[in-house]
Length: 60
Image 1: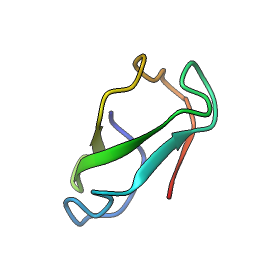
Image 2: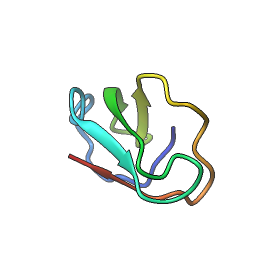
Image 3: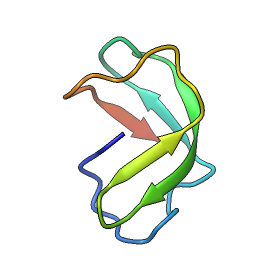
């Protein structure tokens, strides 16, 4: 999933949780398995659906 996160360190968020706060995944949480700092792309364990453009989330 491409994000607007600005952290430049690869795997900075690895092992943390992403919780969606809007969209079809609202209130679902899953583990972050990777992060590419140059692109802001997150990878995570399976979710029930793909997030939509503009869906919001928090990382904890």
